[in-house]
Image (cartoon, rainbow, N blue to C red):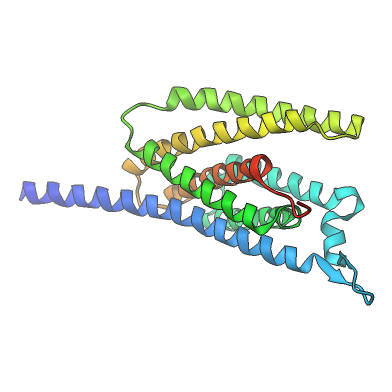
Length: 253
């Protein structure tokens, strides 16, 4: 009888672990799919044709990307606000509110991602996506299977990420002042971003797996799964955008 109870407990633990992992990676995949749809359809409705055959920004496109990109910058600020809000307030939110915030973030990010369809050709976007997907899958498997503790590496990666953010802000400010693109600095930042978020993918995967070991089918763990999905989503998107900057070919070429 005791042996039977022990086996049932082990089965229950494995079931809870699988459920937690399925939720985390499933919600991350859903967010990517939803953002892709939003980005594509936004890019379609962004342009309109004049009676004389010219292609110009539609009223919707001007709202998002007109006025010197003010709408785009507001969307970027909104993204940061949502991520910070979710990260610090999720413990006090209901699961429904947390999930809605996560979906809303993927929607807003889809709006900003629509710009890549304007800048890059479809072949470049497809190549970057599949390259990112392959890299992401490999690093998720590595993070889940490795016996090494990636906690220390994760700390260094987060420090490197802070450096990338600082360099990106400086790059933006210098670009505004000089009114000319700093191609080499932009390339260095993009390469560093790919390296850092590739490492963070493995780190986040290992962290999620460890949480899954003690996961339960409760609202708190459902919210933790949302945070895990958000972290993986951000890893994927940042690798994708950086690969596009490095290897992407513009529509003009």
